[in-house]
Amino acid sequence: MGVVKAARGSREAARAGKGRSERLSEALLYILASLFLLILIYPLYFIVIASFSDPSAVAGGQVWLVPKGFTLDGYRELLKHDNIWIGYRNTILYTAAGTAIGLAVNLSAAYALSRKDLVGRRFFSLFFIFTMFFSGGLIPTFLTIRDFHMYDTFLVMVLPFSVVVFDIIVARTFFRTSIPGDLWEAAQLDGCGNLRYFLLVVLPLSKAIVAVLGLWIAVGYWNSYFNALIYLKNPDLYPLQLILRNILITNQMQSSMGSGEAAQIALRLASMMRYSVIIVATVPIMLIYPFVQKYFNQGVMIGAVKE
Amino acid sequence: MKTGRLELRRGAGRIRRNWGLYLLLLPAFTLTLLFAYKPMYGVLIAFKDYSPALGIGDSPWAGFKYFEKFFHSYQFSNTIKNTLILSLYSLATFPIPIVLALMVNQMRANRFRRFFQTVSYMPHFISTVVMVGLLLILLSPGTGLLGSVFRLFGAQAPDLIGSSSWFASLYVWSDVWQHVGWDSIIYIAALSAVDPSLYEAATVDGANRWHKVRYIDIPMLMPTAITLLILRVGGLLGVGFEKVYLMQNDLNILSSEILSTYVYKIGLLSSQYSFSSAINLFNTLINFALLILVNQIAKKVGDNSLW
Image (cartoon, rainbow over all chains, first blue to last red):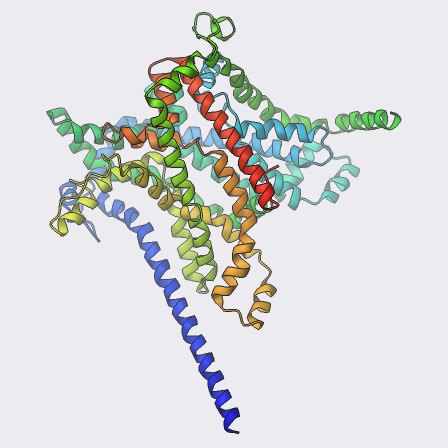
């Protein structure tokens, strides 16, 4: 009797102990996660409040949790700089055209490669994959672009580098795993050709992968400056990121090194709008994500995990 | 023989029947041919004394002159050392997104979990230019957040941006900050595919939370992790030009000059096309060899490989 009671007691104690350690690890998990969130979010939050604050208060270290000396001067200053808005317009055009071209080129290639009855499938796959690991390099590519008279044109920003092999692989896996093969058999019996089948049957069933690739490609175009740096000379064609580079980095470096009057003016201008320009350049592309989020887990999972 | 011919005829029939698929493949194929394979032919200029007037074909051969020039230049060991340090350091942070995914997978509070994920994705959408701009702004010893924090304690902040010894850490950890949430998506997706009955069975066997992570979650992530690791190692020496170039300044150049920035400066800024291409080719070949090596190791150790 006593033994049974003792045994039951110790079992209860064990359960209670386990409950406590579970709760402890639970608490630890959420503390760690919150700390992590803070590290991620504070720099972003700081930029937002700094963009609405008096620049000298920011520089003096008085801005921590809320804007100090609330002002919209930083944003007003942006309006005076035409090159920012030209850059903005260019970036929107490059992103729209580049994403449309990228989706068309990569999705259609991916679909063709996903079909088991494509003769030469292995050859074409290798043909694309090889370019992931070997390339002619900077100068030969530059000379090629020049030979095609694409240097310093709109076209160079949206066409030559639109094939992304990684995207093709992901989309190919998606098509292979989520479009049933019987569907094609049935469509064929109804006299539907490959092109019509791809456009009218496959694509509507593949919203997830279209959303995922679209996001990847659009973010890539919005944020990159490399191609513009290498292939553009005319400032009227500059995308936003190249203009940002001048405002945020080149000026900053010059003003921290030089000390002349010009450097002083550059410093004042840069410090007035460097926060607002970051907000204006980043918020639009961040806003895309919630719209495609619902497709995201599905698309990434099917496309990449099973590869 | 007979079956061979039959196969051939069947293949030809399939090609004719599937002409639409080849049409879908055509744009990506043509673009890759023109802008990836044609520049590969241009690699020849690494072995020639390239003169724009003569073109690639007619320029006189130089043999390995430019490779030797690079091997004997004072930048040789420096750029290779910097490139290796940066890439190995980045590679070492590879497990961090996995840890994050394991953490997110443990969160039972759904609303917190969703908030956590959304916030952790946000920095990914920041462009490289803005990211480096953020570093310059926040870490400025005079006017930045770092300076303000140090002043709170009555100390003088160090100049991290202009320091050779801090360069690699800034580069790597700002990358982790920016992409850890995003990189964890793929692992979170893989974890959500784990069969729940495995956990139930483990609970019956008396496994606690840590045991389940250790013996179910981590093994489940291994195939995905190894595939991604191989891809990363393949690009080991291809460390991103964009961010390093933006972070460079006169004060940290000793540790921030890497192969790709050197290729750019020699090639496009000082127009030594052949010399630049030779360095570029050397870089690509090492990458390629590394990729094959790692893939072989992965094949031997586990059952994972890229091809």
